[in-house]
Image (cartoon, rainbow, N blue to C red; front, top):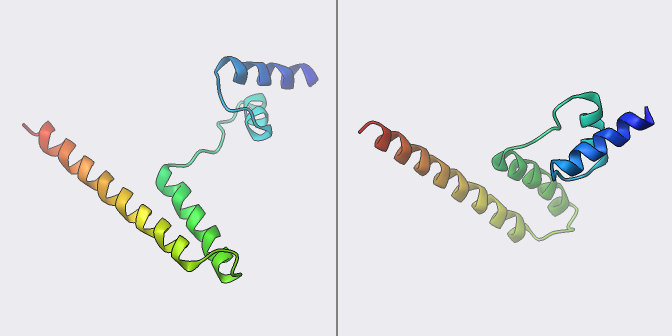
Length: 90
């Protein structure tokens, strides 16, 4: 087992991937590591941040700015998709 874990770690190093316990475990077990899109990551972040705002660890304005970020990224991605589909129709 130790050799397998070492081999998984070495493979991640060769791939120049981020080294984490979860990454080594997934590589060892032959599973894909959990990944998120940027929008999923922002959603998770905002949910966690909302809980911290409730506990008064963060200001509500900080959370509001992250919500604006999410909205702006959503608009940009929709704009890019719309533009890509209109140019491919030509």
